[in-house]
Image (cartoon, rainbow, N blue to C red; front, side, top):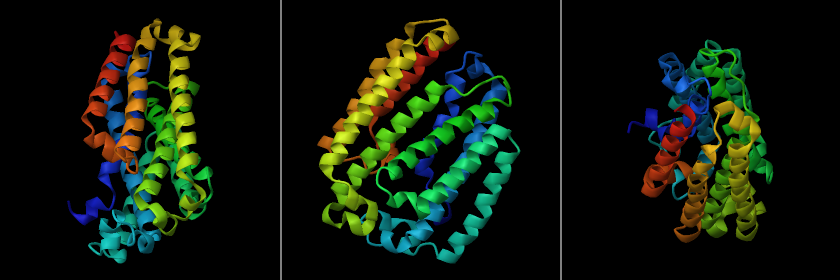
Length: 295
């Protein structure tokens, strides 16, 4: 892969797939609306460019530390395959392009993109060095992605609203993954963890394991309450969405298995792209949810 594309970290773009959630969990059957898919796909691409620009900005700021990391040292900038001058040129091209493109969609989508960008600026310069707030800010970034998905879908259906359940479930799942990522980094870097990422000095494996369990359990409970809430049953005219809960439970437990038994977790996107049981489980969850909601 050319370093000009690799520096935008396309393997991380799977995180932006949450923008398509409103198409599945909409009572207006937007899943069958071609225009909704077109706009959501365009919104997904905009967020890919935007998030890629944020990753590029972080790589420029953390270049010297990344050179000492066993995996991050292979990235285009710290490895020297892409000069800082060229990286800055890419950044000043892609970032304004993504912001301007988001402005052309809807007000909600534009606000989500702006908030996502400024959150990441705050994270890069301050929040990443503040214990607990670092993982909370990562989770909040996913909430802005989900809100952006609703914003772009509102182009087709202006009456579509942002469900508090979507916000809660997204936040808790992202928090779980963010905490697990910290555990993976500590496990991988061991005694050198603090020299690579200063905030890791504030965490221990025991503390991480405790809050990972809390976040995982809360994620499952949030989704379970969503499936049986009166609002959800009235919205979809069915009380059968609870049938999808086993897929969520399996996904959380499978992820815990991978980080505790196989020592993974430092890169959630890599796990999703490489673990076949998780991939099958995700597909089955989407298909089951689609069948119960849309049919």
